[in-house]
Length: 261
Image 1 (cartoon, rainbow, N blue to C red):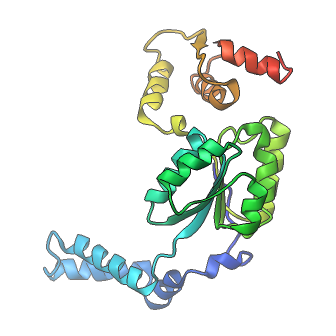
Image 2 (image 1 turned 90 degrees about the horizontal axis):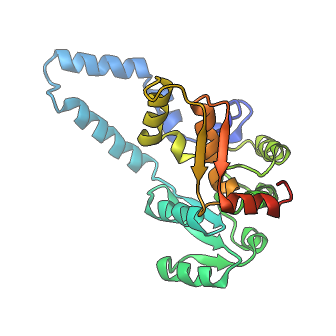
């Protein structure tokens, strides 16, 4: 999920790219295309010419404007949070600086894997003493709103909130409103909506390959309904299922815990 960016004339960040200003000033896309076409007609552009030209442009751009890594922090270092930390550490565009988790043993594990990472037990202390360009909210859904609201008080460039974005519709809408007011991008990762395997299953079900689908029954004792249930619900919607059955001992316990069973 991503929010629409602020119009260029209203967004001070929109004109911060020196590369874009340079290209607009010196050469339009149409001029660039004509140059390549003319070069090809003269025979000077062999089969490696286009690739070589693009590589040269990339190298020139990197020298003109060195890539400045965006700093990042993660709140909640369970499975999702650790995946974010690993991805940030492996990326050429981000530099993970800090992580917050209530469990001391998690902090000890992270220090071994990411020696330069600053570890906090309180996300508020992390935001105050180690502000970053990007924040990843990877805690349980009921806490997303509080953490996102606190993170957005800082000078963020972007924010990621794990799916589901909140535990209630009202809370989710408030988070979206906070982000809109901040005029920054929001990402809500939902891998099963884009991976090849689940998309193929959905397509084959929709095409009628298994006949008329009347019921989906899921048994998943190892995942809670809020974190994993969003996938099951998405499958039901995507396959146009009217009746959805859920059988999960842990899910029922979660419902009882939150007083909705």
